[in-house]
Length: 358
Image 1: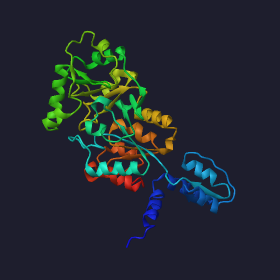
Image 2: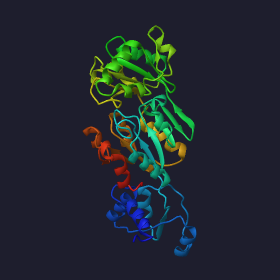
Image 3: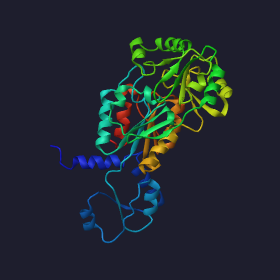
Image 4: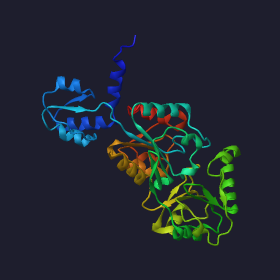
């Protein structure tokens, strides 16, 4: 028979498991040989029975703050919830390539995380309009879209960065007239022309079933505009661009576009050096996450990011804990704090269990 306190003990062990913020704090204390008595509770009456005197600090937890407090004599009382903000990439992390919905195990893991008091955010290179309807319908606390270009929390837009006409024209001048496929993304929809769209159909049809392509928000209700005269001035509110089958290798395209943009390998199809995403320099998933942290009045140390692609580098480096999927490229895994299993092997839910989030 399962003991009634067994679940509580299990939850405590999850909080101090290797890789968790509490474990990091404990290891710092042990290395410094300061010692500490930690109490995890939100029950003020229980605290009064155990503690004589003391003072409230009411600060967000960080491993460094715990270490500094441990230099003092006395017990340290920590809130039992240890709430975190979780940021999830979409393609290759929440949703497998070629699919448009999360697996049941992934969905159940997110529900469990919310039930445990954590906040969950989408963090994607996709424009808001191009996020799968199934994800929009899910109970996320907010969204970092367009790789940090469009950020929503609590139903309120807190960040919106756009190219403007001059930067739009720079991309068109660079690759608009060659064999590259281009789709410009705004918060409300996508813009392309017939030639650019044909390049995308060719690129995707070899990888995905056509029904998946037709149901993809990127291609539904897309604006087709074949008139390049004044194109940039008609669509200055573009946030990001996806491209495919470019005439230029990604390294060469970066040189051509210069310091105004960041060019990363594709996260919307299997990565290769002639397809990718073009975003504004100085705007990325990390800046979007920082905007969320500030809006919620929380700390960077409260953040955990999950991703698999090159456009996740900034997120994985910024978040207190960065988790790379097993299907991520080696360079993505190298910049992460933890590598979990492949998306096809429930990597996301397995990582959340290891971190004590569920």
